[in-house]
Length: 252
Image (cartoon, rainbow, N blue to C red):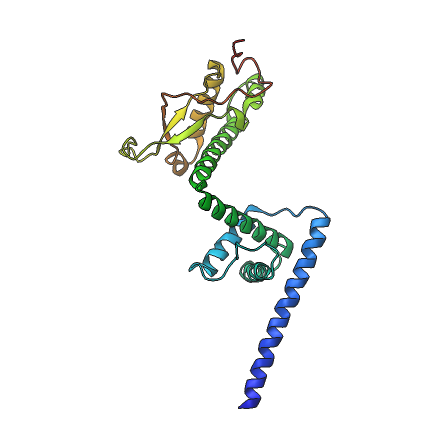
């Protein structure tokens, strides 16, 4: 009986020692990577870290200690656990240990920042700003995609490339539950018009949006939002160095 207990204790100590060795090795590797070339993390790897973390610590027990720095022993143990789980799930060849660790540290920072914003009462404001940026970025991606297959002159395409940046995308706001028309099944958003936008730029955007809606798969087209023009225009100033055909010159 005593022999079995000692044997079990030896196995536990051996496992703990192996885990500590792995943590030390990963920390040394992280130091090497921070001094060496930048580690690129694929989006799928970052999403996998979030998914696995959510499954492992869904009850809020364990996981990152946000009151400590990310390199603390407790948080390094969590990062090592995530690394092992992800490499078991996806194989050891898909992403390197350095990539998974960097994704985990980025997620730690995201969770910590979210907690701090909630404590300061600024989380909702930050989430709203992030949502608006995301909508503008998706709109930009749709228009860039449409331009690739649009039958148009090279001159028009050249002009389009000048303004297909995030600075020229108008902002969108969600409609309140009382204002939103759900009869069509589409989301309706309020569009904040850019007061400095010339009609030629507005026409180009409309042409790209119509082409995307026409050529996109049906499942994508059905998810595109509908828009109503806001009574309040955008207060954002025009981009610096904007072409004169796209932007009105502000009055002196």
